[in-house]
Image (cartoon, rainbow, N blue to C red):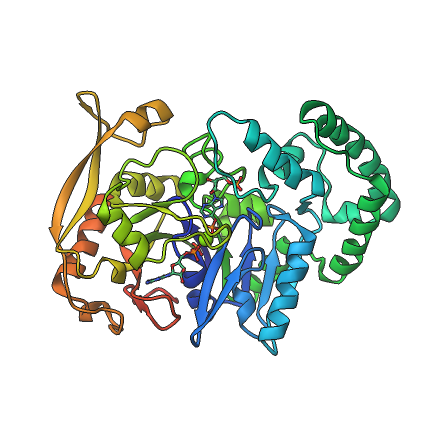
Length: 428
Ligand code: GDP
Ligand code: IMO
Ligand code: MG
């Protein structure tokens, strides 16, 4: 396998964990390049369910190199808890490497995420994990990186400066309690000791693996429509989940990437606030939520559900330069007599040609649907695309026509073996 970037093509929770786990079998290195523990990636192996938040999904394979890139924001106690949990469930896991340039989530980031959200008129519905405030500090050059934590004096001095300002904001803007400097220093220096043995440069690891002819897999978190630049701003996350983010977030050049795959559900979900044109408010939405178990992996919130949105997917194909789509959860559509696909947005009397940048326009769009006949056969035991019912194959073929991207992988269940390969060159 070459150098593959896997991204979410919708609003997150597409099944990136499952597809990463499937492809990781053929890769030597798996890299997370953005986001933090706002992500919740579910992988089911031999009937056992793993929910990964910060660790790359390749960690479930013994000896695989798993990298947390500079573009990720790391909450150290979350990482420690995740590693500790895995060690009780697996005898051997992958080898973890962490970029010294990755930024840290600090206690004030978690507090501010909640306080800012409370004050916000249009609630984003963040995961309250401190993600937005941590990326804000990165961009305004008041962040603290893993490398800064490893130098005890540097860390103590930098935190003194930063915490003084944060305490002003916490107390004077939000009327909250200030944080105790000594307690934070002590807590984080202990995390530094924990992180130290894992620190390595991801760019060096990735290029060395590629030089050896080994496969490298980049595991996106969140999704295209949650991208800070290309998503439904401001109802987005604060990082770059699109394919270009893999370069920035791991320290490699775009010339190294051979293939980009977008993961999409056979329908659409969204968790949190913001417009969602194909959202269903009726029993069909409820049906998709129940059958698809659409409840957040990180926060447990019920996910909003709707029909497949080919307009949004076509946009994701372009923004990421997708070579193909991995379409999962096709099994969830089984038994629905008439399936609908959103094929165009109409705003007032005009059919829009692209995905609108204005949220006001997006929120006021009506969707034009195409109807397709469904199938009733149980497909969870099907292992080849040719073995799918004709109407399921037609549904996938229509998706390709509408988005311009071939389907390379199909998911018919949550476990590793319920993954069908539609592209014979997938692993070349
Ligand atoms: P991620 O954040 O993109 O990794 O996705 P999540 O793990 O948050 O949500 C996807 C959910 O769908 C998980 O519970 C997966 O186990 C499940 N899943 C993934 N692929 C399939 C599939 O093909 N069929 C079914 N029924 N479930 C799937
Ligand atoms: P995975 O990797 C789905 C959503 C939140 C909220 C918005 C901003 O599992 O697909 P944040 O905490 O990032 O500032 O929240 O983004 N969100 C996700 N939705 N899947 C995710 O991750 C998400 N990570 C963040 O619900 O609307
Ligand atoms: Mg998820």
